Image (cartoon, rainbow, N blue to C red):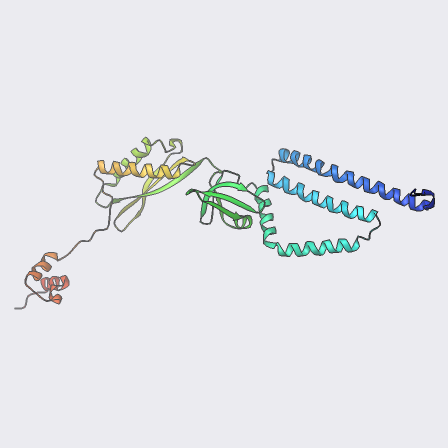
Length: 299
């Protein structure tokens, strides 16, 4: 009663159904096999070309999404569905999504460029604008930085890629330039010898790189000496504090003065004398007192 008579179906229809079934079967197999093949190829590409995982993951995901879309359209087309309207609709939706996610797509492109160009890696010490710290995570859209005061800052990759970014971890040594001032009355050669002795005895200074000690400029209150030397990466702050402290102690031991603002009072004795004589404010002015001393006496 409920049997189905295949003989009633035209031969052309059976052939078309068979071809459609074969195409759909092939597409289903491809939808299962191709993503796994792409994943293995991406892993091989990552090892061979030393690409970051972020790049290979993105490429693999993008290709898989394209394959899935192609297979779905292929299955519908094989089943006799007109896919032209579907393709146009998918294109329009993709355009709308692209316009809406313009900033996100910019961050995505920047993230890929950061990874491809190896601008920095996880754990690197970087500085972007006024943000400095160690890279915690590099994502497709954002980069996470842990600052030195233990804050977590998330930066859009478009901001990182579009800014002047400094990577301090590329090299294992850093050069420090310190300015140390001495009073004009102190002996310059003695001060330089004291600083050089501090650098020679410091465990922070890389002796093989040498150092430079010389007059940088003449300041308002003293002579400014440039102290240039090299330290290991990651010890910049500690080295700065330690070397400056050692120089201060050595200056104290050698009676070398670190200058500070001073005011020399001219005519102070005359001012006090005028004050004791109960003179007016105008008459108490040092200029008035000094002027009275420098004016010749009339006959």
